[in-house]
Image 1 (tube, helix red, strand yellow):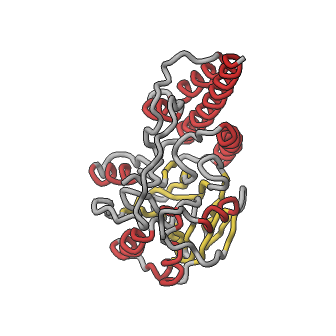
Image 2: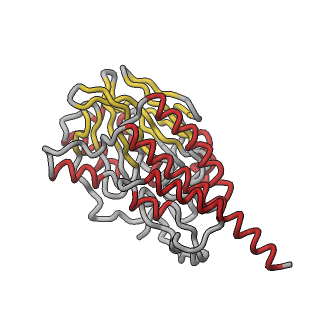
Image 3: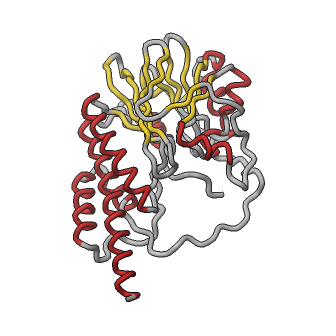
Length: 324
């Protein structure tokens, strides 16, 4: 069953090797240059253009069923950050002197096992959860919020631009919609708990108001700054989304430069890095990639948006010329 698994997946069907107009090709070249060897496998997916419309999706069950093989053992990835997600959705616990922040509410059926159960496995108390964040308005990211609120008193944080999306919910799903929000955030807003401040940056395109999160972490006592990409994994398919996301990424690149972000995670697929840490405990922390590499990743995504945007404009112009 396909879910909103868009973290770093290949979702576009046409190759980018086809002939491109000069503006699109320039951005494509810039994306490839930024990607280098580290992100080479990602640039091909982010920059692809869809050659044909997606076929209509058949009817889905009223409630999407649990996937048996999704559980993933929890793990400590930084001195103050723990993975408490699944193979489907990556959620993290930021532990502070005043309590715990959960970075993603996950699916409703995931959250008790992965978040509450994961914290207990790690020797942490889920009763100390003070906030749970909904990073964007899809049910795999808001589904568990009400549970954490009702069971542990966690305050629910939601992005302002996605409130309507959350309240409407998808027609095919009965994932519980939060009854109320304790904190509504927009671009540049912050959440402080104890000694830790989380900064929210709006990156539209996947949804209207999805946010990414950045905050300080330490690794063996050394200070770093982590970015969780939580605003949807794929390059937007529509020109408006491509433009908005490119502009937001430019702001985010500036923030990454000024604050020295050097650790990267995604709210889909980060279990792969956790498994790598578990398999090779003596190797370097795979979440720590360095500021230069993190900025290269954001630049690649931005240039792919601009390439898609230029390609869409060229296609529209060619279609108009053909019809005349």
